[in-house]
Amino acid sequence: MAERAILTIGDRSYEFPVIEGSEGERAIDITELRARTGLITYDPGFGNTGSCISNITFIDGEKGILRYRGIPIEQFDRPTPNFIEAAWLIIFGRLPTKDDLAGFNVILTENAHLDESMKHNFEGFPVGAPPMAMLSAMINALSCFHPEYLKLSDEDTFEAAAARLFSKIRTIAAYSYRRSKGVPYIFPNPHLRYCANFLHMMFSMPYKDHVIDSDIEDALNLIFILHADHEQNCSAATVRVVGSGQANLFASVAAGVCALWGPRHGGANLAVIRMLEDVHRGNHSPEECIRMAKSQTSDFRLMGFGHRVYKNYDPRARILKAVCDRVLTRHHVNDPLLEIALRLEELALKDEYFVERKLYPNVDFYSGIIMRAIGIPTDMFPVMFAIGRVPGWIAQWREQQGDPQTRIARPRQIYAGPTVTSYIPIERRESAG
Image (cartoon, rainbow, N blue to C red):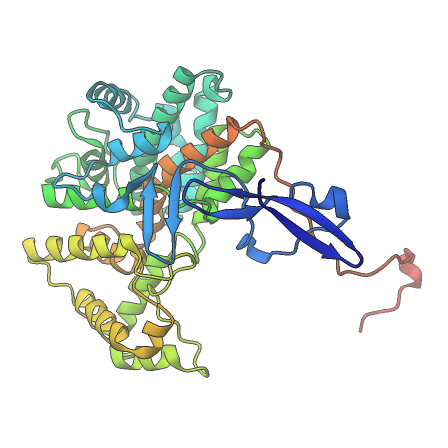
């Protein structure tokens, strides 16, 4: 007999089924709670609420586990990390064959360019406009140039739409950066791979191509892979909420970009860099940062430590730490912020306060350092996060659209405002002063 949960309210009891996932996660199915009891649950931030059943990503925060479609994240850190392969896996649910990968790469290459009319849209933004604002707006604009993909009726149409979005987001991102600097746009190079092509469009000039270093290209591939999906986070949940209203793929992903823009989500690695720069300027020493982070009277927060989900070492951070050491050592990058970061990590991992609370370095702690070494400016950090996260957003949208149980997202609330009152004509209202 299937296990059931019993909820007692007053003198009445109600039974609800208990469901279990493939990794042993259990949940009480309360889909009929309101209909049967007249009550709803109260869960700010939805930290205890399962909004869907998903086959994409598994996280065990207590054990520090992250898997894409069952494959441990550590297995993607190969001699030559391949973001396209990981993206295919996440979007389509299986590792690609050589033919799959070759065909997908051809589609990506053929669709890296933007319609020439879109270039004029960039001119409407002031120089210095936030790249994330341009990224979101231009992804939405893609739907105007590709109306044939507003309704995805079959597998081939979905793959074509996904490939176009996945390919063009790097071009939009690079053009957003170029616009913010007031320098000429650089067309994509069909002879370069995905990440190398992005770096080319970011940093080449009409009179001089940017030299693509293989270590840097591998590091960027790995950064994108490690950010490709992370279960029902703020931006993925936003994509699903927007998609639940049957919004198209472009609009749903543009909404995900907006959610990612916030400093608590996609801007976290930028906050780490700003903290390290503050230390480097001499405002605080690493030791003072540790003391202030532990003080109940200080509003200082040690950025890059701890995670909403992971109560162990973030597995992505462990991988990026090795990449960070490799890139900076091989290229003789003398970054004082790395030394500060390593000192903070050393102090925190020896301090009982952080150890007891399992406040380990997270992925944001090292990703910013690597991107600085690559030459990515800080205002582009959230954009880099968005490029990496696109496969996950596409996969989440696709999974939801194919789920017959999907209903339009419509959370409930506990109303705490005034009870019934009467409208007062304006001439009878007393001045608030």
